[in-house]
Structures are given as structure tokens and as C-alpha cells.
Image 1: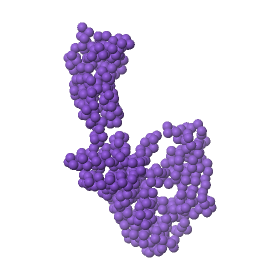
Image 2 (image 1 turned 120 degrees about the vertical axis):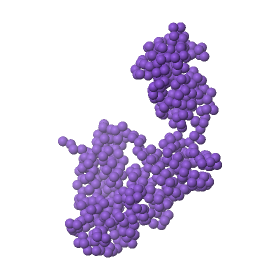
Image 3 (image 1 turned 90 degrees about the horizontal axis):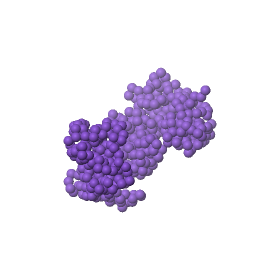
Image 4 (image 1 turned 90 degrees about the vertical axis):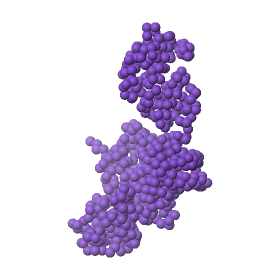
Length: 562
């Protein structure tokens, strides 16, 4: 073995360990260890007899792990040296590495990857490979960087039988209650990995049969908690398997499966700086699985996701799923949302999330002038637990133009007289009924109504704005906008309200930037405003809301220039 080290370094000159830079405590301890480990005959002493190593072996395990990496790095450096002292130092370092690897040391993803990569050297793998693999097994399931390093170690030594189980797909398998259930889980996972690009009916039916064979109890107690716990690892290492499981879960009508699918959809649409959403393909699969279930709980989570996910692609996919469900039930989108979510208690966790979703939806109904027939309105906004509690905190008007709200256990007009609504009902807006005096007893509403800012004309002026703030406001107020930047000089923000289309034109402030890391312009400029139909034909309610939005954009994001 000594001849191998000498042959490996025939073209290099002999170096002294003192020439190695000692910038940290690990290298300084290593220098002391090498000085103590070489005797007068220029050969190494037993590593366990060196005082420095004895002192290191009683220190914290984190320090020992870092010192081990320094030992392996110096071992590779010694292979480039010539002569008997270099060989003696190498064997001394090899002994020290074996002593340290005999202990269970703490590793994270990065340090364990470095350990495996250093051991993958052809001269170190035969001596230290088995000990390093034991460290990997102690750590648990290897991450993707460690798996790639293990593949290199597999080529360097005779460890195929030990490394294969660590690289096997069977590592990603939840614990089953019996051998039979484990076999059924393997069959389900094998089928999920064969997910086609376009899900066929045959593939889906087979997956549904395998999930039914596994049983609802095993799925809820073992599979679904494991998916939520291992979601980042599954997405990183086995994305097709994860998508297949998400599609198959669309055939299990249980509360846990619905909550798991909603969690995956929200997790997939989380924004990564500079990269956008994590995985829109996985999110769409989860949303479609929720729509395939079609239960009241699934509809409730689709409504919640519609208000919590602010990506245009997410809004489009959720609206598509809800409209498909509404068409299947021969009803409208509003009927589906209100009927399937109105029975939740406003004090429950899901009810509180639905409250926020309906609050945003109702304000949009105020902006568009959405109307309800009296029987539907009474069923949803007077008698149901959730929407009834919200309806009693809003101001309404019927077809006669009378404003009324809930007071003293009855619907009353501004003068306090009880009222029986007639015909169609809609949310009261001051732009359509500004001549009505609400009096001093105006109620406190969920969002501004009687105290809402009112505008009767658009006062548009070109101005310079901060694009990041303005884009966030666009998303909040339902304007669709693609940011300008290095590769897009102009863009537009579009709002659709009550059949009207308002277009706000923007351009980047300067061709030379400044730009963000993602290539987006820091500043943008309002350049023009268009509408269909023309501004003089827009209903007063829509005109006031557009003017209110424009004033909000300027007040928050405008850049004041001297």
C-alpha cells in the first residue's frame, strides 16, 4: 500500500506540515498532533498515544466532526508529498480518522456530503468507506447531495451491497402496520411512479383500486402523515412519485386527505426568492384532486386557497375547478361557494379562514354590484351560521333602493323602522345612493360602506411609482399585472368589474435600471388609462371604485420628485 502512495505522487515535491496554513483551531490542533505523532526515527507513533488527540476525543462531538474533516483533507494533501515522512504522516492521519469515525458524530447535510466526498478517494475508500457508511446510516435517510456523493463512493470501493439500500427507492416508504400493508404500499408507490404526463382513466382507476386495497385506516394513519412530514424530501428527490400520490388521493373522500391536498397546494405555491412558486404543476394536481373529491370540505378549502394564493395562475386554476363543480351541479359559482361554506361556525379554525375569504369576496361583490334573489339571500345571509354572521354586519339595499341593516334583532331602515326586503338584494354603495342619509346611527361594517371614499370622476396623472409596492397593491385589488423589467419595457394592469374593463399602462422608469436580482425594474411609470366602455358610460359604482384604487396606488407607491 505504501508503494501506491509513492507512485501517486511521483511528480510532486516533498512538503513539510508546517507549511500548511493554520487559519483556525482545527488546523492548529492538527499541526500539534502531527508534531507529536512522529518519533525520532521519522515514523509515526500510535495515534491514541498523542496528547492532542486524547484531548480532542473528550471535547464536544461537533468539534470532533470538524477535526475529522480537517484530518481527511490533510490526508489527501499528504498523498501529493514524497518520501518516508509523508507516508508516516499519512498513516498517522489514517489511524486518527479511524478512531474518530468509530464514534457517532453529529452531521448536517453539507458536512456529511463533504465527509463522503473526501472518503471517495481511491486510497481512502478501502480503509474508511465502511466506517463512513455507518455514519450515514446513523444519520438516517440521506439527502440528495449525500446520495450523489454515495454514488461516487460506490465507484471507488467494494461497497455496492451496503450502498444500494441507502440509494434504493424503498427508503422512501412509510412504516406499515403489517407485512401485507407494506407490500400494498410498495405496489401503490410503484404505480404512482409510473404517472403518465396525461393522466388516463385506466391509470386513475388502477390507483383508486390500489388505494382502496390499502384501506382508509392505513392511509390516514400511515400514508397521509408521512406525505406531509416528508413533503420537501419527496418533492426534491421523487417529484413524479409525489404527483402520483397526490392524484391518487383525489379518490379518498376523507377529511385528512382533503387537508393534505390543500396543504400541498399551498406549499407548492409558496414563493421562492428569484424563482417564483415552488411547483405550479404539483399545485395544479392538488387543486384538481380537490375538485375531483367535490365534497363540502373540498369546496371550502378551494375557496380558502382562492383568497390565500395570490398568483394569477392559482386564481385561474381555482376558478376553473370551482366553475366545473358548479356546472356539474347545475348552479352558479356564487351558489356553490355560498351553499357549501355557509354552514361552518365562524368560531372554528376553518370558519375563521373562510371568514377572511368571504370578506374579500363580498367586497368584490360590493364593487361589482352583485345581486341576490331574496330567497337565496335569506338562506345564506340571514339564516346560515357563517354568512349570516357576516350579513348582519353589512348594509344592504333592495330593488326599491331602501338601505337597511341588522339592528335590535331585525332588519331596519336608517330611521329605525323594521323592513321586509323585496325583490333582489345587493350590497349598498354610496355611489348609487349618495342622496340617502344614513343618520347618526350608522353601523360598523366589515369593510367601509357608508364611510367609503366616493369619487365621481377619474383624476389620472402620469407618475413614477415603486414597482414592488404597486404590484402588491395590484394583486390585493384584483388587477392583473405582469411586472416590467430588463426584458419587458412596457406592461399593463387590467381590472374587470361588472362587465367593464379598465387598463392602466405602465413602463419601466429607465432603460438602464435600477433592476433587482430577478431583472425586474425597481421603478415604473404610469403612462395612460383606457376603459371599455368609455369612462363617461361606466356605472358610478365602478367609476368610484377605479378612482379609489388609483388614488390608493399613488398614495402608497408614488415617488415624490423635487
